[in-house]
View 1 (tube, rainbow, N blue to C red):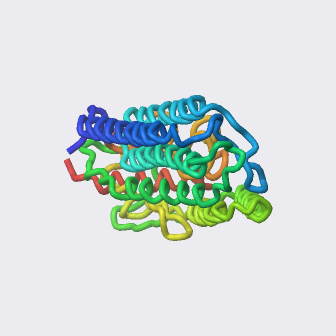
View 2 (view 1 turned 45 degrees about the horizontal axis):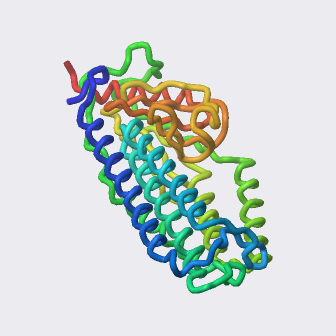
Amino acid sequence: MTSGTEPVRAPHRRMRRVGLTVTVCGLAILAVAAAVVLSWRGDLPDPVATHWGAQGSPDGFMSLGAFLWGGFGLGALLVLGFGAVTTLWGQSAVSRRIGAATTIWVALFLALVQLGALHVQRGLADASGAGEIGGALTLAIVGSLVPAVLVGVLLPGDPPQPADTPVAPEASRVPLAASERAVWIGHTDAGAGIAMGAVAIVVLVTLTVVSGVWGLLIVAALLVGVFVAMFAFTVRVDESGLLVRSSAGWPRTHVPLDEVLRASVVQVRPLREFGGWGWRVGRGGRVGIVLRAGEGLLVERTGGRSIVVTVADAGTAAALLNTLADRQRPAR
């Protein structure tokens, strides 16, 4: 059993292990890609093309060394940063999955973009004759996203961590008889954010048609999937605990009653606390399903974990969750 006030060592071991593993893997990916580029240097022009215009022709150039170390140096900094976030803020499986997948995605995407951009220049005396890189960009998008998603999906979830203490006595409750049952259901969506997402998708499709880089259509399709999955959720509190489910059916997350330490209402500032909107990881590893600013439901759970969901009438949801969690606790 896990007390809400005692430190839990197992989650910290998982955080360190996952964070270290994905950081090493990310740096290894960048190092291998850099070694491949260096093996090509005799076949590459000087300077190399580093930017392509709307018509698919190179319009920016720099030395191979500057391109190589600038790109891979940035990649290493990002991998170390996301790896550190996973290590320090990975108390929950959701946080570890997001951090690990992002770390691997950054490393693979930057490595594949660098390799693709340089591969089309091999054997050229003048980089201005390099062809378009739509195929390389498409490969970088797919080749980085699929492994990153697999990493996030395959990471194990949290083992059960039932509490052995009552719900915090100062937490709000609803008057509910011992035999009485109750369910609370709420809905939350991004509102204006959905319209902004639709505009972004239209702009991206237009850019694809103008530039002829058809690989960008994959990005547009991915954005459609993200907005469908991430910007409308149903929130349910009942005798199984808290369930938050996307309108698409996935993703979803569940907090069982025996892991609830306290539920309460908080005021959420998405940018300051979570760096944006959507399914996020905020400061201290707090998981946020944040679709707007304002009232949110905060659920503190065992293992140093917590989740915030922006939803109207969060006070009723919190009080009912506290009541049901108290009722579920074994008699002393």
